[in-house]
Image (tube, rainbow, N blue to C red; front, side, top):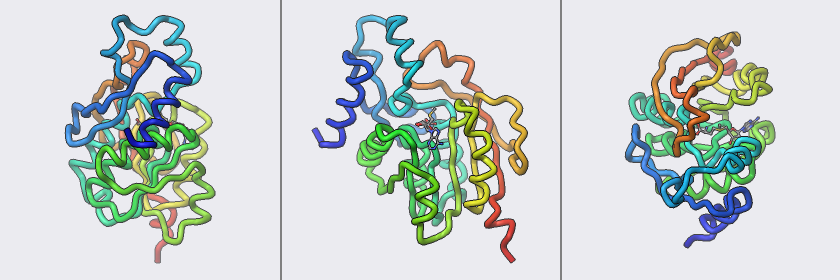
Length: 230
Ligand SMILES: C[S@@+](CC[C@H](N)C(=O)[O-])C[C@H]1O[C@@H](n2cnc3c(N)ncnc32)[C@H](O)[C@@H]1O
């Protein structure tokens, strides 16, 4: 087993000691696999206590969220959205959007997540899908160090934390365009963001608690660096 996969399994066992992760093919984008929680190796459903622990300190990276799946499908159907571009997957989690961007010809892809464990997951999933991805734990440090402009920021299911809503305006300042997929905020009202696509997917592995979050809206915003071009 590779070192990164070993590390990932150890991180999972800290939260759910009896759990395992397995390569899981995404139903909407079967060319893409992720190391996700294996709910079939358990001879019982998650106990209420396990669900409580998962809900309180979620290892987001071992689930694939509906928004990430719809974003990957969008990228497959619209490869020009990433081809030859510098792409940042903000709130990458498992890195599904980053993997999709790398698969469909992005020039450079950076998976960014504040959760160190998610970065390990992105590394394992980049290896699983044979793609090259860079990593960052801090978006603002990333932009201060990047030696070229960001073309596209992808953000899937980051508004579960409402504190991220004000960040949407800041993200626009740092790129040419943003694609944001979300299933939780039903009437997003942030200047510049327009709804333009939608889809349905189920969080994997499925947890009943997430059923209400199956319908995903994709928003698009032009970034300031595009708007301000001469
Ligand atoms: C619900 S998960 C979505 C993961 C993935 N994008 C998907 O759709 O499957 C949200 C992720 O965003 C990350 N996140 C939340 N706020 C963030 C921030 N301010 N900067 C970077 N990552 C953030 C979390 O750590 C988590 O991994």
